Image 1 (cartoon, rainbow, N blue to C red):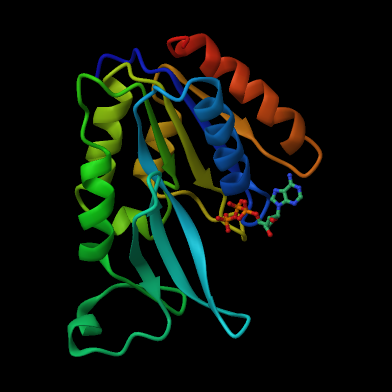
Image 2: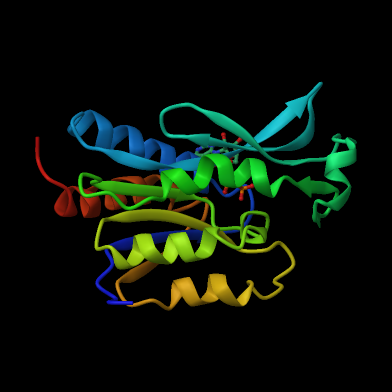
Length: 193
Ligand SMILES: Nc1ncnc2c1ncn2[C@@H]1O[C@H](COP(=O)(O)OP(=O)(O)OP(=O)(O)O)[C@@H](O)[C@H]1O
């Protein structure tokens, strides 16, 4: 790994606003220069009748795929790993996330929300994220801090320690000012219109 990455890593407890922040910054960047080629995905809750029933991955151009579900009961899902009450559909996640992490000559920015426990069940995901980091293409990513202070998986902790990675810890009091700060940092890294 060359360690030349231009990466901001947003961390914070569940629900503090990581996805919201990243999507707001994404919108600001897109408006500032609509010609940028931005790859990546964000992770979104799935709700039915007010209850959370799973998570899906959404690409930045709006395609969706299942990440994990508490209601799936097919034969196929018998072997899927559990995180809490959710079964992780690794194949579905990989089908949409891995192509987004392909480093291409004309990519300006990667967004990965999030590098979490469910995503880490894919053996190909973390190596792909490290490749993005080593590509010197700017990267905005999020990593959750687990609720009960358990250690992050080793690989995730490693990402935080890569050279070129700046960690931003989000709280309710700094999340609005961080939006401007992160946008400013990326504006300095990205081509102007
Ligand atoms: N700056 C903000 N002002 C007001 N509400 C916010 C803000 N950021 C997030 N929220 C609200 O907080 C809730 C959680 O936000 P979000 O999903 O972005 O958090 P998260 O840190 O990504 O959560 P998770 O770790 O579970 O993925 C949402 O309902 C969102 O509308």
